[in-house]
Image (tube, rainbow, N blue to C red; front, side, top):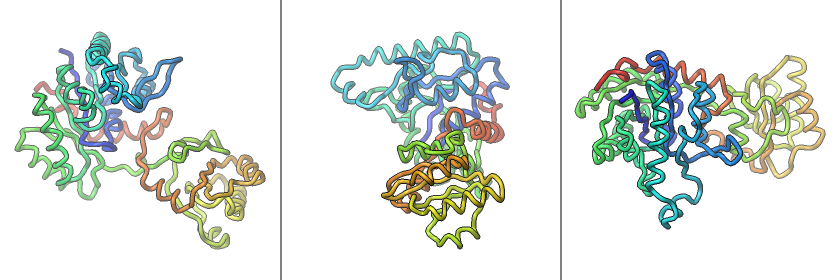
Length: 362
């Protein structure tokens, strides 16, 4: 059988897709043709008329210029209502199995290596008899598990996921720790290897936390607040070094203006908005952005001024503090087209994975 890996994680928001970007890129140095499949997807987008696929599949197909058809790369989707339909007997389980196998075999025909990305933790999909362990067993693949970069809690989560793999007779090829704090990296790497040695499972890499990868863009804020940019639309992928809630007098604000900062302030604070525009005129491009809040939307004059200044802005009718709280608790997902973030992820992950161990025969 050709080289193939099933990539799972210990939970949601662990960084599975980010890690897979670096994994696929790095494997391209070892194999001529690396394929990608996400057998079971949840969040989907429409790529053609009537064809919906998992959003991560679009990201990988576009990033690595993969030639495999979408139907093979994303054979099964769990859209809203799918679980109820399955339990009501409206969905044929065997057809789901056949679609996954057919897609995998189609990709294998023109690939030397395949990265198969699971959905969430090992148990996701169990209610439909299609969890990650079941899919890995179906395809005859060893599993690489990505865990959060801690120690005790990370290992506990890993133990739960390992138990399900064991029940299906699935071998865990190795573990990757993601988002490890740099000042604790050596310690965590040392002790996690000791803990894994009891199971005879290798640690395949420890990826350090990268602030930039956790930094949302204006496009992320559009999703978060279910709103569209009202100005500066071409800057929807702009990143910010910091976020600032403006509640000070305008004179105080003027003294503390910084470049590349997201401003969160009521739309009625036209003095703050005007001061920002004036500062940009006199000091050059600020690379700033606005999330305007409150019951009163931005006036037409302010909207026109922001458009003229080419500053990205969206409006959401919530209190500024609530907006800030939503932003700080938001988990960023790498999106198609965010070239800067995609390249950062690839470079970071490639550098910190042991590809010789990953590609070794077991």
